[in-house]
Length: 151
Image (cartoon, rainbow, N blue to C red):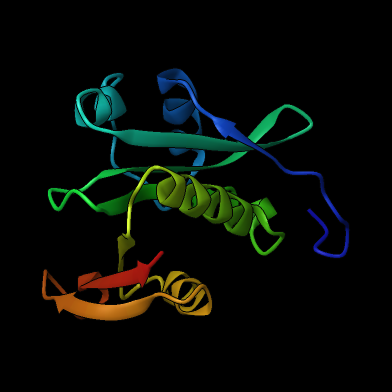
């Protein structure tokens, strides 16, 4: 995708099957996931599952759910196909999720990323998230960076 071109991004709620399809297309997610990966995590909690598409083609997704603290929403999983990065897809998905979370009574939203994904850390900071924690796990590149935003 040429970054100069303006694309029309459609963000909408997703089916379990669509989540599975787009998840498997994101190169950073190399772990095999089963058919019920999303359903098992989400079916009994207040959640939002989104896909982004251009001309009917799935190009990104974002999934979140209510955290143990009732007024906090956890933006759990998401990704954009490499050819569509830096073209507004992640922003469109995040805008939709944050608006939905606020309309549904959530006061905060947070996500975790890894040190190996500086673009995601930068994206969060640019959206008003603050780093509230670092969890050591494995090598330094795998340390979890926890980011929070008040809605």
